[in-house]
Length: 382
Image (cartoon, rainbow, N blue to C red; front, side, top):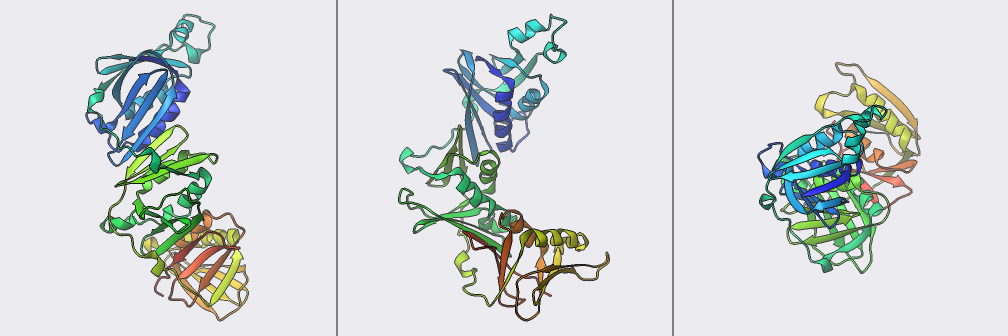
């Protein structure tokens, strides 16, 4: 295998591939990324056996071939070498990395830019390509499309509510289903719930609800743009997702997701409408004095006024008042401030609506005016 490629182009794709890799043991095939050069295309693959990633890069192939290289060091080398074209050549289970000949010739010219003058050679050990795991595939007819921007919004509005409790593994992912004419995503950790539903069309096939691990969703949110379409296939125990030049798949989380519909309040008696940024800023300031893991703050409501407070503790106390639209009896609701802060951060609307029955039952947070998503939060014990 021999090919040449622009360093910056390759660096971008290798950096994403390395995000998939969980192991840093140089002797493990799972620490390596697969390179396959042929027909002016370099295919790059990486996996942790649960999430699989594949992309392609245009290169100049002098000799077709394939091998695997230790991803961590490969990325470090690409980060360290100067910009310009690089030449990659395979010798048995090693890959040589040098500047392309034209760049190397410049090193003899004292008037050349010093960054381009550096002549270097790296020889990186690898493992034969035949040992790299095979990726699962999906039937082409099973894919459906959704705008990338819509899918990313669904992930953004839910992923922070995923549980990190491995004993309740069925809540450590985002639930994804088609219900009637809507695509729905839900996440919960048992104390809060995030819900979003987007209308879809008849081209989206019916599929049973599945639980998607956060890792593949995080990769998509981070690297997918806001234009174009994203293709999805739910097949067996895997989900397959394509966008741009990227192909990803992930093993789904097995288990039964909680019946989230039972958690969603049917009706609530009281409504507060308040400026989102003002409330978020007040929470951030007041929470500076919150105690340890409890993260407890109090949202106190009275006629046309909301107060964010920390009761007296070993650090002191804090209070900030905000005007709001509320008419009703006074309430003091104890909440984990992160359960307010995180949904507020991913909203774009100026105002938010907080609905509740009393200080001990679930509150509902949604944008004002209402949109396609909402969040349900359980109060803490006072």
